Length: 307
Length: 307
Image 1 (cartoon, chains in turn green, yellow):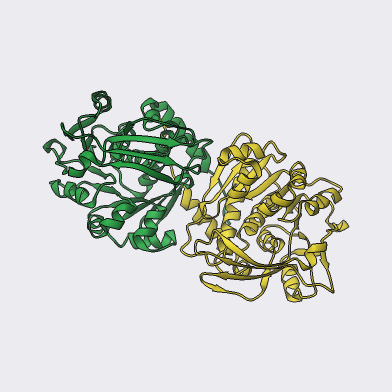
Image 2 (cartoon, helix red, strand yellow):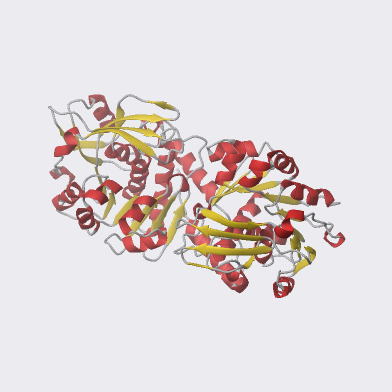
């Protein structure tokens, strides 16, 4: 089943305790596409790039079954650029540079060929942009998943709440869930978010795993304990791509299948952090993914007699 | 099989965002005993109390199959007293008062009737005291588990390393594992600790669950997402008591059974935090425990096809 991925395609310059990069490929839609394309084709990309975006990168994506008709190419501006430096704990980072460039005028147009897509991943973008994509779809997708961040809560909370009413699932980190609800307890925050529109909620906790909530159930997926997190950039988007890629592959949006999708997403994210940017995601094979998912099974499986 | 629990029996005064207590019963060995006695009898306590320690409390413990022959009663000093205030996140706290009282002279004597115990839980005490107990045992227990804390790393690291060489398992939190090894990565810290003596390591991460390591494998147990953590005092000791209680009940120290023991310990800890001090641990029934363990199974179980 087809999947639309909306988000940035951009450049990042990254410093971690392990090293630094010049401008490399990044952006939420890039990571979603690299992860999801392991599971589903086509991935229908909606984004915007400038004249400096490499053609080879576009070709790489096409070869993986990523459609680019929805990617606007601006000939007189540069691509979005972000630069950041991670602290030793890798959970916090300083933004050094944010050059919006083409992103300042991003007004996404959904191509006719994308109509009828059954899955929609709204990457972290302004609520207005997210809402505009939903409104352009003639048939509502089977599942709409939305990412967002603290920045939009600070400057566009009303718009964000409007989008929330239109989506099936919100995917945020624990700090964002707290900020959105004013509740410190993750469980209380989850309950509140589930009254704001989404039927499902994923709270990402980085190295501590992820939680999936609906009104009746909760599922806790661990993160693989890694010897080194080389570069966390894109891990959340890669998780999202693996998650919705698995759902789109199977067409099954039951809670049970969402659990599997979280394991798939977690496995993909565990690859992402092994090298700078999407480097590792470009290398891995189906066999690597299967092996990694087995590691997750081994990590949490136990048998216990009750009573 | 019998279990020796060494630790404090004490008073705590606790402030949390939800309320405060006067002096109530606390101490690491108290929590271990309340948790472990659900699974194994006898629990053979080694501790020290002052003239102010309530007789009814001793009677309660005896009724649960806890032997007190190894608890020294000092008639002219008060029991150990700790007072602390938790911050809103419940992961950090300020110590307001530490009155060592009887604990300053604690020189544990292992009663003859305790000889031959197959399981030994060394609660958080000075390394000298921990080592003294090990040396008094004529037959080495099947499994020795050791707790410790940052305080001993700061003032008695050499002694702590001596004890580490004598034990089978270390149980610490993530910050303590980092401090002990100087490694920020939990996986690297774990590898280093497994060269220092213990064959097994449990790293407790509070609301983020716990990790079990040996040289070949790792297991990640989640924590139950709780709407409210009312009072975290004693949760780590309760976890330890449930863990070693299950092992002592089954007599099985395989990695597979340690996984089960971690789930049991996590379930016990999830009760502990529901009320002040050990209040909730005194109320719960076997049926409550079974139900809670089922919740843990539901929380993490998933089925996934590979390949």
